[in-house]
Length: 78
Image (cartoon, rainbow, N blue to C red; front, side, top):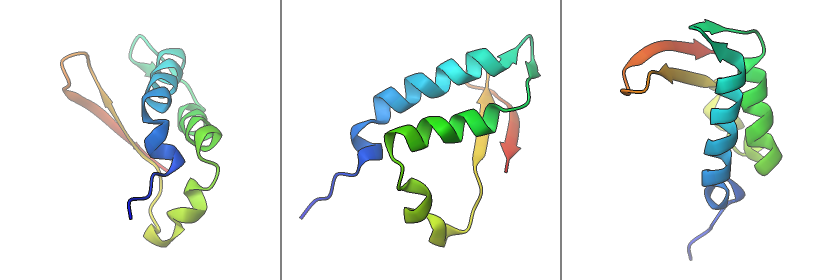
């Protein structure tokens, strides 16, 4: 049996909304406060159970910020 969870089904939409949040919160190389909260809010909007489902991992949110060439610029962790 193969399970398909909401995060998998909505992956493309989640990626678009995370990109929108990054565009709003990262301007001229400066990261405005609230970026990580917005990203978490976007993911929960599509899959409200993800936090409970992944609680066992005991890890926080890690966001890699990359430039248009894919080069790592910064890592944010909660």
